[in-house]
Image 1 (cartoon, helix red, strand yellow):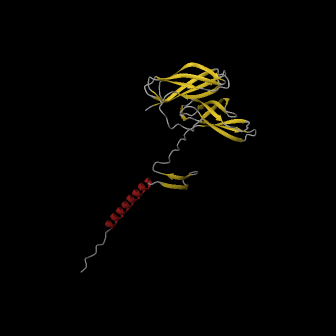
Image 2: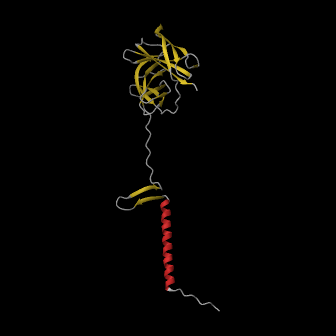
Image 3: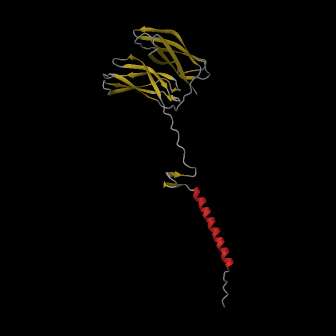
Length: 262
């Protein structure tokens, strides 16, 4: 014996339809919210006149372009040429750091050219010192060894942003014991002492002897080291330089530096 079938009434059908509509709206809302969180690629034209584009659009929008880093820069001011062994000679001058940050000791390339401007050969040299601060200058002497016959020189400066900063020894000073004087021919002698008035031991204590003519042009650049492997705080050490000059210098300048011993 079969149970009697239940025939749905209009009221029941209407309630089911309302529930179905509500369920569909919930699903559509959930799908739309999920789609908004998923990055998507668009390409082509849409919207009003002139609306177009190609690219990736993510949750955080388009990334702003990064600011390019300022390249390192430096200049070379030529002061003089002095003789070397046989046909070799030196070019002397100063390098200036025009970068907004410190640079490593810059390289200067001297290019030898013929009358037509054709490059014949080149020679390199490096400025004195380890790190050159912004707007600071450093002397340089470039050796042009065994040059071929040439007409003129051009120069290229190769600076690089400093990445290593050795700690400098503070409190170093020097005293000239005897005025620079001729020993024989073009040979001169400069003697003195370096005093360490700082609180740290200094190592690699270097003395630069710069010679200038009456026009304040650099005509000599020589380097020597103070005696001993290091210079303790409160101690002193002698130095002696034996430079050669084409002509008698008008005046001198002395620079002393060293690294703090850790």
